[in-house]
Length: 337
Image (cartoon, rainbow, N blue to C red; front, side, top):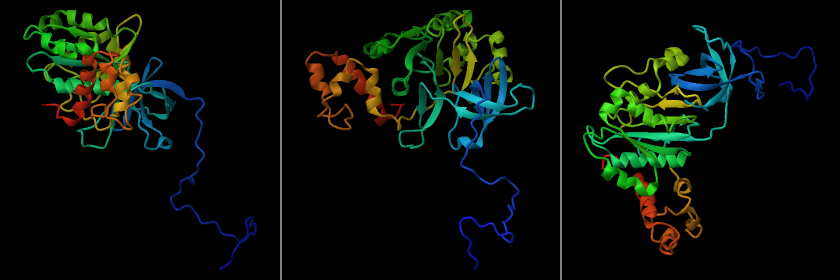
């Protein structure tokens, strides 16, 4: 066998042709310094609808991003045809750093973590007080996901004409979560949307709730048709009657200060396998200093937890510690309990 040195320049060296006819692989990735910034509005089977300035652009993820996926709410940079014309396709070449994430797993035993929404400021948890009955364990799980992901929670309680909200509000009183209580009539005359709107101005809010609680009806009222034109054809997600949202969808809020409303599919379960208790405790600034003397990897619900002594010394309200532990315990319970 003939061997060559480091710099073979003989004329008779043969170069093996590339049978596939494509370019050889390289570790050098294009910088795409001329890429335009946009926001992901919705994702559907590998196609992402993005808002670039005032245009709705359909895009796909560039190969160099590898397994990194963009989700609704992500800030992204795109190249290619950004005209938004029919049958055009751009490429997403960069995904910005996320300020918050709403994540969930299918159940508590599922190791696969799914990011539902990125960069939202707030999570509006919509639940009916009756028809269907409220599910406190599901609310607890949504609260944990909000605290874990860096979102501020908001409780939206609907159908108060069928059942009083007092018991549910008492359960969450120690958490200090803001809330809005509405009736069915207020959904019809728009008063419910007006009341909720006061908490959304200038913010990006993701809405979550199981089917039948009025979540999508509320989103429709918050984002009237003239604002939906901004997102063009991606608005074929909701209709009359049965809830038909199948993927998260970002819609611009009708407000002088701006803001976005993100409708998410109705949830039947909210797995928390991904949650780290040390991140949840950060949402309890009155309790967090008391964890300094906790044992390593403390679950904050065990005999050696330092929070018991911290609270007993009068540093925090015992009701707050009870609420924290109730939320953390939801990882061990089924949300239908």
